[in-house]
Length: 87
Image (tube, rainbow, N blue to C red; front, side, top):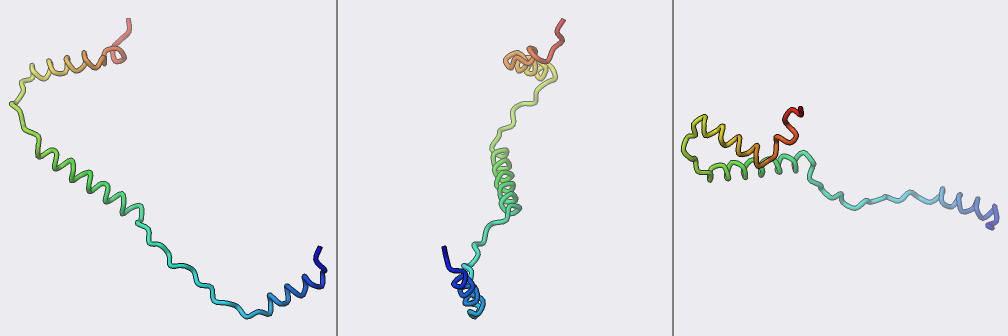
């Protein structure tokens, strides 16, 4: 255990020392979250726009063709298992 007189002496020495200038390391510049989200959205928009320009337009479908296509999708997707009335 330290002598109380030594503790008081250490505290007084610390208090009487001239203050030192503290220098902190330069702060690292981080990209703000809003900027990274904006960049992500811009890239996603550019990608979708570019890909949509590559899609070929097919012939116009008649309403009968659209109904047949919907029936096909419902059948292979098994939508009727959950989205139909249970008697």
